[in-house]
Image (tube, rainbow, N blue to C red; front, side):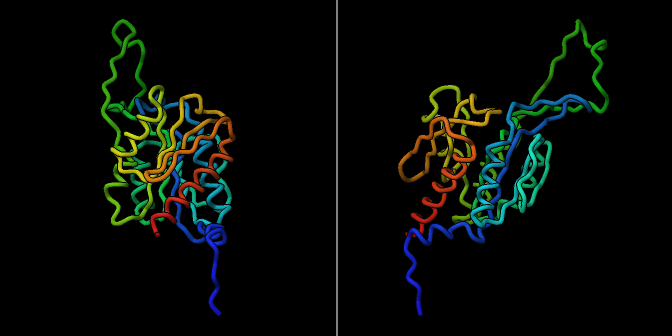
Amino acid sequence: MRLNLSHKTHSKFFWHGKKVVVTAGPTREAIDPVRYLSNDSSGRMGYALAHEAQKQGAKVVLISGPTSLKPPRYVFFVPVQSADQMLQASLTHGLIADIFIGAAAVADWKPVHCSTAKLKKSKCQKNSLTLKLKPNPDILLTISQKKKGPLPLVAGFALETENLIQNARLKMQSKNLDLIVANKPAALNKQNTSAWVIPRFGAMCAFKHVSKEVLAGKILGAIRDLRESNRK
């Protein structure tokens, strides 16, 4: 007997068996053995996405920079420090995934040279130090450029201080993303957040003052709807 599954029933089982890769947290770019460049990301959003995807039946790989969070149970955890390490782990796991979600706050720059010894303040002329930086690799762009075919579906985040929606849409276009989540710096290191979920095709949805766990479910729902609409 052939089962006739409704769209609602099919959606309920959408994540079962799907491989989902999530990046989370900040990266640390070493200046010397004890100092580094980083940011205020707590990793909560990425960890919430990994936890929610696993609960819904996905096989989840969580690639995380340094955080104080405990990895969700039943998730394959890959700890990294730098953007270069996160890129390598993302290439290893992300290109064979169904969904790749770049929720990490990757440092945009790294020092051109990392001192092998602690930099001594007494050796800096007039107590000043000039730090020369170079760009870090663009993980989202690299994944979207290297994927073959429609998979993985690639989603990312845009943290903006001005022209939030416009800049998020430009980032989605320039990096060839399928979906982007726009938010403001107030979201960093907070339990709750406000965000705008913008798919490449379809309507944008706004979520105001919600927990990151709730937002994770909304983002995954938008990814599911986008993936299913592409199949029609």
